[in-house]
Image (cartoon, one colour):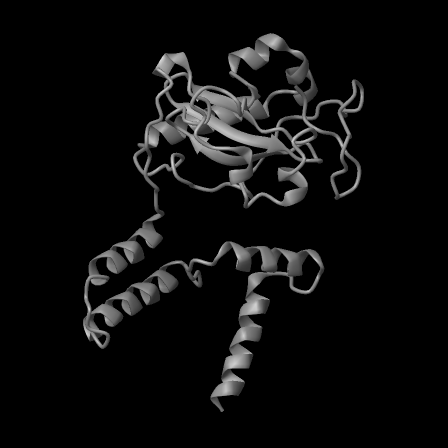
Length: 248
């Protein structure tokens, strides 16, 4: 089990790592660009100790020479590092369900298998894959061992709940409690949400929290990859210009 080696920015089918191709002292590194909370893989019920344990585990891996780790059966076993067995007993998800991952990775299971390693036997797993730059891209955190049930937990699937950051949770609470109001012109409902959004913007010095669809996210990534937009603010600015012109 080794991460994939490839040259260039676009993964190519069939490329596999070979001994000697990994530069000396190449260490583990991580990316969160594909991390998500999804059903059965939420973080809302975890305490601070879990996250400290996670950071310690990732820190320990970051000290490891990646090529040596992949060659060392004992090291892999100590971290419970192995590929996901999608045919295993009671596995609740399938690889195809990770549909936010770009297709050039998701549809190439040979070169980009999904792996897991554990935080500890009691604290669950981390699931991800190595990209063409040998960076381990984290997909989900699995505190309840749901990705690969085993006899240690009687092959049971245990639910989780989504976690929220401090700012987004405020808006979520407001939407939950005002959502039951059926008065379309309710000034209290609209005013509360508006004030919370303004306060979050002020406290974070310019961050706007909003939810976009997967389609919008994919379209933005496509524009950015083609050099048409460097960041979301450019698209936001263009949208404002269009609406301002319509309002004239």
